[in-house]
Length: 162
Image 1 (cartoon, rainbow, N blue to C red):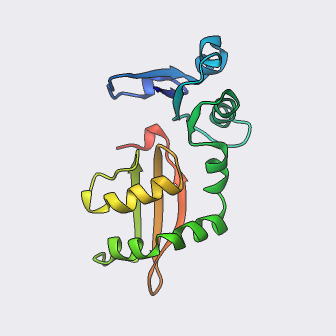
Image 2 (image 1 turned 90 degrees about the vertical axis):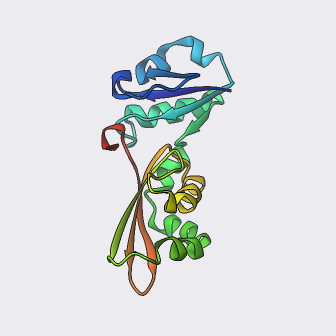
């Protein structure tokens, strides 16, 4: 399966990955060669996923073309719903409590890059959150009120990667 990274501007993606094509959102939308192939895994790293934005349209079009898209339109919608965040985080509550048990602060932000975090002690939690909210770049915000609670999850943009 061919992997494609779609960005507003390919110059935004500074990393070199073998066997991964980096294209602009406009190229992905307009080039008929992408429409005619079914065997694509598409990582949508556009600057915005808001309704009617270029990033939203890339995910919508990729789904219509039968491509595997990250994030999907349903993931874009799910990350906006507090009730869905609560239900999904309840499924991994034990892992959340175990992973964050040594923290002394009342808030914690976890950045997740393709299912991983820079600090390896959060890899299991990062992987589980990535599996629940299938998006290439995520930020999870936790707060402590008698126990750790996943307060919010947002889709990160390329320019938010340190």
